[in-house]
Image 1 (cartoon, rainbow, N blue to C red):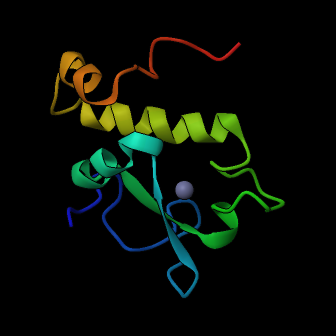
Image 2 (image 1 turned 135 degrees about the vertical axis):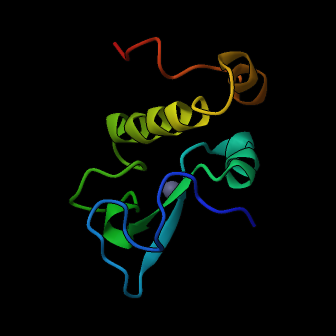
Length: 100
Ligand SMILES: [Zn+2]
């Protein structure tokens, strides 16, 4: 298992919480989930900042929140890789377009 390249500690990315109920969120999902695991493109979130059924905006109930984490992951990846490498691995860029 690789280490997250998006945070150093095993704690909630948003709140710093580090007790029970921490979830691992892969910034890329579906067929890209395994790549995200290998590349360390995941974060830990307190469960209520992760699940869809939550009063908070989470990557599983809010498209903008989902995109925020995806863009963050791509930016971090591209600190050590080229855009071409990103495209070859993940198929689309999240950085040069905005949701309408
Ligand atoms: Zn998730």
